[in-house]
Image 1 (tube, rainbow, N blue to C red):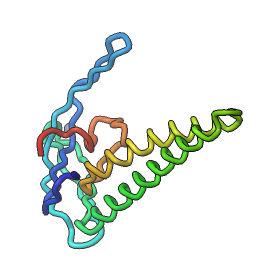
Image 2: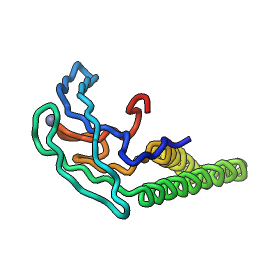
Image 3: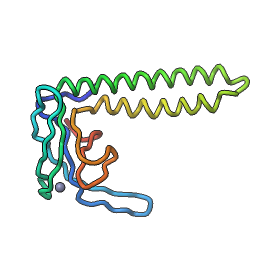
Image 4: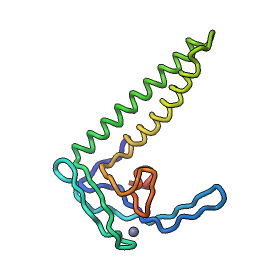
Length: 152
Ligand SMILES: [Zn+2]
């Protein structure tokens, strides 16, 4: 089930305290801070918070309940479409096995469908209507951790 939506998002923003590389491993340690911003009645509200660790400005956008639910619906639709792609490619692989002509295409579609469905299902489950600084793969010193943010 997706996470519960409240008047204040349960997602935290993170201050990156250390980023170390050991051979091929990378260890990133961050300090989570709550986003104490009320959701707007409609649309989106953008605010600049002062980071609780370093005091630097952190730009956060909080979506309304309706906008967040719309994003969730979009992620659910993307999940369904990518799962349909997976099923179509599995059936295609089974039907093309004797000659194998379209096998690379169906294999590519199958792998893409699996990756897209996992990505979309995770977003559907964790969508909290918060957009933070940095890119989704957490570049920069401040970011919003959308997945695996601990107990809710
Ligand atoms: Zn900071």
